[in-house]
Length: 373
Ligand SMILES: NC(=O)c1ccc[n+]([C@@H]2O[C@H](COP(=O)([O-])OP(=O)(O)OC[C@H]3O[C@@H](n4cnc5c(N)ncnc54)[C@H](O)[C@@H]3O)[C@@H](O)[C@H]2O)c1
Ligand SMILES: [Zn+2]
Image (cartoon, rainbow, N blue to C red; front, side):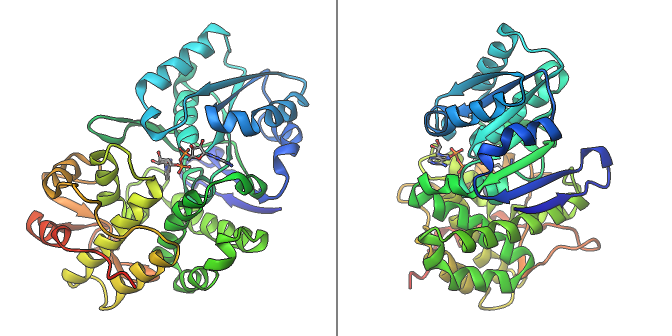
């Protein structure tokens, strides 16, 4: 088992561990008892994950001797809403669970964001543990304490920072995940490479075959390195006041695309398209070294990720959506852009994001992002 510690410097009590290994789901009883003891546990999972792993997780949690309740909601990004959050909260009130209870978020990023937001707000906050079961959630979504729901105005616009007590990533759960969801997780892994580690980036490209084949050691290596990179960034900036903006590479366009396409794309697919266009934009603005965009698109293509805007997506609708994004300030569109593969352009003196004119954005979005190899 690999353990990565997230040492939150602003609020030391919020520090927690991420455990990465195989068969960890069956150890949940001991882990919960040691790291998040509670009088009762609410395991929150989407309908699909609940049918595959719900029983095992409930049985493991029952070994704490506490009462365990399984709460489910319909799977799908379009259910990451206030309505679902409200329904889950009402069910906790109906039980009722008190302040001595804890939440276990079981599933992908949608479960994590919804269950985490429920935990953050229920009786002004319950402790919670994340059990991510998608590659994307293990690599990215389960680290950093961001929770929330989407609205018709855009993604994740209502939410809270609420750090989990523990994250338990059981790599064995990836065996039941679909191939497109493995690829979607790799978009975030490649993003971490672009942000912080060119060698990791190149290593991922080289091992694309092993990753697609779900080779255990290769997946463990990727999840561990990505978690380290993300943990180091969020540890220094838990509430996104500065350097954490780097993690938004690919997400300004990606989030807008998700919203505009009514969630027809997976989050990781939208981020891949976002990285392809934002890479080009960074080069066009003279921010990124020549060749950066090509290197990024070639890597994404290796994993079969999409690079171009889907047919029928309106560039103007995308730009309108980006204007209400949390990262945009005062009407101009700000993006976290790379200087090259392995380093972001932002810094303390020049700001962590770059302002880009709508005209430049429009021009880049009007063309193809990827020269498909
Ligand atoms: N909080 C954060 O910091 C953060 C970071 C990145 C992404 N996110 C959010 O994460 C969400 C995307 O996460 P996701 O891609 O994991 O989506 P998801 O949670 O919808 O999971 C994808 C699908 O896979 C299924 N599934 C999950 N685990 C499975 C398994 N082991 N076997 C078989 N099927 C399984 C789910 O039922 C679902 O249908 C987005 O809402 C995004 O905004 C949050
Ligand atoms: Zn993401």
